[in-house]
Figure 1 (tube, rainbow, N blue to C red):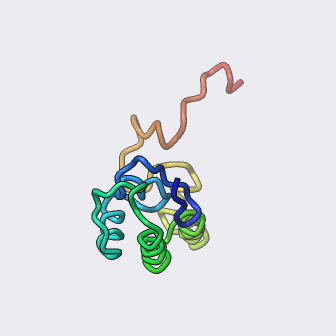
Figure 2 (spheres, rainbow, N blue to C red):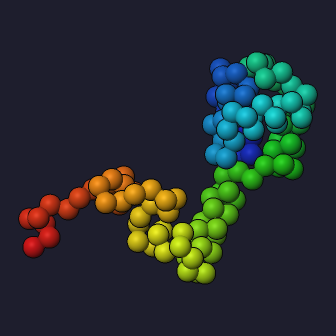
Length: 121
């Protein structure tokens, strides 16, 4: 298994699919990374040599925000919305959808499951 940016990449996968196992890298980003590193996206991870892996690591470190850094940035963004008390921040606090969906009958997945009448007593 190849190790890129602290993540284990399965050897038997095609390169762009293997890169998507890293948190923060989707299919489009994976293909762009491989193009910048001048590697065919259809190459298998096990067929990549050390210099190819170094190139991929360099591109990821230079261009992408991944893993714990990305999670931390997303958390800070949400916390900023809550701190400035904007509409989206208030909806986050209340556990309601913040992108304009109606909530009278739906939004169960964001609100959470309903509490039964017996449990409320």
